[in-house]
Image (tube, rainbow, N blue to C red; front, side, top):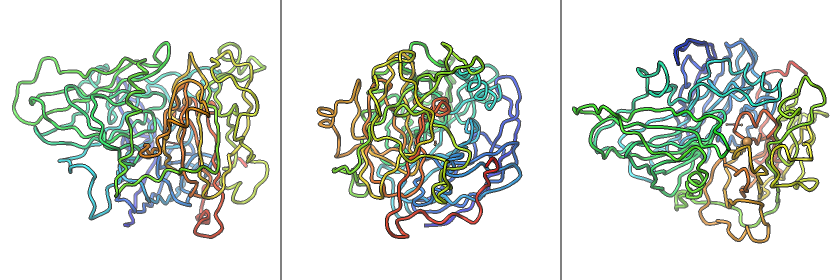
Length: 543
Ligand code: C2O
Ligand code: CU
């Protein structure tokens, strides 16, 4: 592969949106940030210069980074933040991924404004497993907050309640025609009649799954999370925070303007946020601009069948060139519960709704981020930073169908890592445990892609449900939506030694403790062990 070099300068930049101007943290002054474009097998060195006001880290979402957790980025998991006025060079190694991924800040809530696309083209001399599109376009679904994002999460954590929602969703940084003061800047995607385009769609939104569609145009989904899929024809997609979807669209309607729209999916009593962002598909040529631009029909915000029916259609391409390698025999089996709940809060200063503080947990452990990164502590055997005894099963009976507020067991606060052996064939059943409130949980694992071999509603039944597993062509992804009252089974080979964060990609759930760390031990040789650390890692000043 080739080697590429990028400079990422983190700095405050002014933008005017929704009728007001504010300064946000950006990379190289743009929102969204720059695109990284490589071929499969390339390596990229990114020199991250922090000219901002606070410490920041950058993560390459979905890039496996074989044996190289040192450049993975999650704050206080694999590194401490890059202090202001210093820089850190990250080595991003592209091995097996092909398609669309993305990068984002991985400290506090900085990723709201610090993110961008990663495009991984087929190796030179090879082609897409679908007809070559006429052109490609990246559509990043994002958000705009009028307030300061850091202040929003700090306040939510201090009071124990839900954080404020953003003021707009955006497509490539623009809110679109339905928002105030946004008409002139709506993102436009020019197309030639008759041509086919590859759209690389990324959900970088903090807290909302999305339905996405284009008026009168069919979508053919051909990839997700940096892997190819069997083509799916549909008129909408559902995409969770963290996910990417590669979609072909042919400009086969009468030349005109058509709305592209994205709106939240939330399987809740009331939408967390029900606003809609738009862009415009704009045919080239001469025609009369319609007085009303056609708008796509998208499912209702709470249409969980529409969301589920789309998701279960995803299947690996499973071709000779892109085979699946799903483990058939399991050597390590883990059952993990995924919950939003509350934490007992004895004093008024931290009290939120119902006197307690909103919290989230995996297997009833609400993750506490340490002061020194876990990778360093693991590599240098520093004591008292974390425990390596995250349980394979819940420790006591847990009411999987319990609702928020009905939980009688409070989660424990702890920093526990789940440790597996090199080359273990790992199966994880992720069981959602909330019925009424809360949402699906887009669980994301660093350092791996995994196969989603099964999915269902209600409590997982270990006798009958495994019979429905797809071991032929399950989708290979890095983020999977765990139904809030259902389960998902994933499988992967633990062939990437390192320290890998695992968490819900709804940022408020991650902040509330819906996280853990997967430690994959070294194999017996240097080629199956974590690489030695680079000469310079950002210091952990708080230690
Ligand atoms: Cu997209 Cu831990 O991140
Ligand atoms: Cu979640």
